[in-house]
Length: 214
Image (cartoon, rainbow, N blue to C red; front, side, top):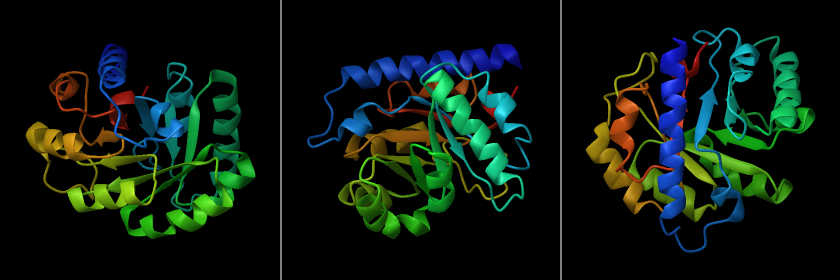
C-alpha cells in the first residue's frame, strides 16, 4: 500500500510540473494558479481515519473534507485545519460554509448541484478557494463563468464509489481539460499505475480517496 501511495504522489507531482509549463487560460485567478496538484478526498465509509491519512500527505497538498453529517465533523475538521497550518496544506470543506468558517478552512468544495451558490459565497468570502464537482463540459464551462477556482471531474476510471457512473476514460478527460478555462482535477479510480495515463490530458492534478489511504 505504501509503495502504491508513493507512486500516486509521484505521478501527481509530474502532472503538476506539466501543468506549470502550460500557458494558463486568460484571466485565471492567482488562487487557481497556486492550487495543489494532489488532493485527498475524505469519505466516512472508505476513509475512517482522515487525519491519520492526511498526516502522510506531502507538503503543499490539498484536502477536501466531506463530513456527510458525521457527529465528529467539528473535531475532525479542527484537527485537519490545525494539520493544514502546520504542513502547508490547503483545506476545503465540502458543502458546509459554516463549518469552513468555524475551523478557518481555506474555502469550500461544492457538489455540482450547489454550484449556483458560488456567487453568494464569493461575495461573503472573497479570499476563499471555491471548487466544484463537474460531470460534463457544460458544467465545467459554468464553473469557469462563475469564477470558481477548479473543477473536479469524475469518474475518470472505474471507481469503488457507489455513486460513480461509467468511467470517462483518458480520451474524454483530455477533451474536457483542453477546452476548460479553469484547472481540471481528475477523480475516480486513480491509482499509481493508471495515473500515468493522465500525463498528456492537460489535467491540473489528481484527487483520490483509496489511492492515498494509509
